[in-house]
Length: 67
Ligand SMILES: [Zn+2]
Image 1 (cartoon, rainbow, N blue to C red):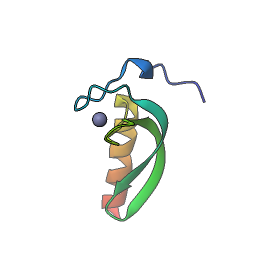
Image 2 (cartoon, protein in one colour):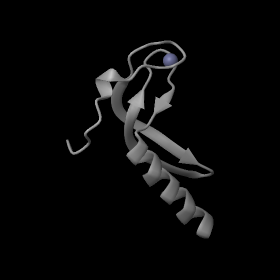
Image 3 (tube, rainbow, N blue to C red):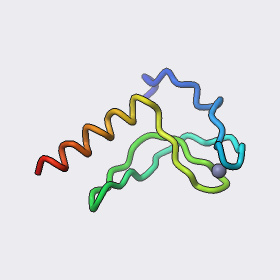
Image 4 (cartoon, rainbow, N blue to C red):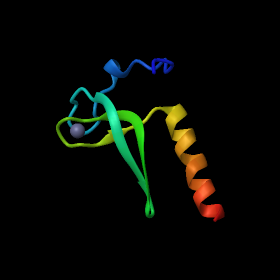
């Protein structure tokens, strides 16, 4: 899986100014949980997702709300 063109290594946590690490993060919305590829701050655990992933997550939320 290397199709994402984002430069994760340039991402820093805006709270701690700590370099985020790429990995699988748990996206949860209501009772719905899904592992997605994202980045996480090793210090405070804040999760960051790319713009593209953000769009995917929003579409997932819409699908859930439709039910
Ligand atoms: Zn942080």
